[in-house]
Image (cartoon, rainbow, N blue to C red; front, side, top):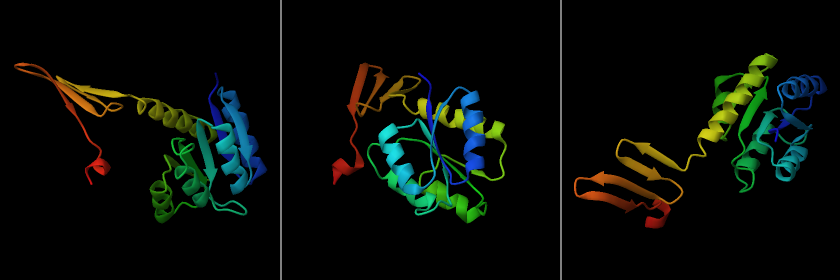
Length: 165
């Protein structure tokens, strides 16, 4: 099944350029042209990644990102900010709101496709349920750690910080 990308931009030329290049790279593309439409599309379509312009009509892209990252069904969706706002403070705000990457207009369509692939690849690597380092294995989904001790295998149950208060 092809991965689904939601492009959110109010400029038709940008939408057309991104749609063409992402479809050519094998992605299924959907689009939205303002903030409320983007939030609804993300909740309904559940894309694998969102390319999000910051300067949108009716609702800023930063607000869209905040809403999506605060929603249980959309918080896991990676977001690439695509904007003409290139100042350091703008990039920092984007990353603090949960953006996975930040691309400044004008941009290279080939670079955009490569960044989309890289972010999606990172997302799949984060799905790993356990981490192994030498004799130690941490099972993230079970909140446990096991290791080989000289007297035999040992298993510890981990607790979330929120469970301790």
